[in-house]
Length: 185
Image (cartoon, rainbow, N blue to C red):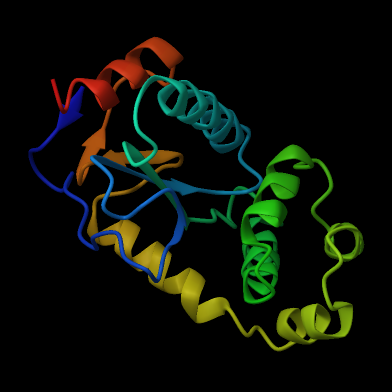
């Protein structure tokens, strides 16, 4: 179910400033606010990957645009903020999605030493990566994501928006796929 009442509309529309998989001109835009240390965020991201694969085999390539925005919950997940900063440091080196996947796949190990290992495994420029992390170069970007989520009514993660409206149903493949495909039928 997509709820269009109250604070459930996406306040900041998708743009080239976002981390995007697919075309911003796609029929359906799916925006996820997530936290790298949240098991639920990782599960929903894996579900979205499955749905993206299914849709790409069933329809034209520009049907679904997926966007990830940071919404770390440091009061619950102490390493989430720093993991988001690592993802942004990787983004500067054109490796956002690769780091994104590593962080979700390795949620049990998000301390600094592991983040450096992940950066090294991706072939990132380690001195640049460390400099970005140590000086908090990407904190403002993460704050912008959090602010846009808060303005959109996000209070818990994961939070999904499908074509600007918050998805409030169960996070399972059948229901999420139906919500995505029913928008154009």
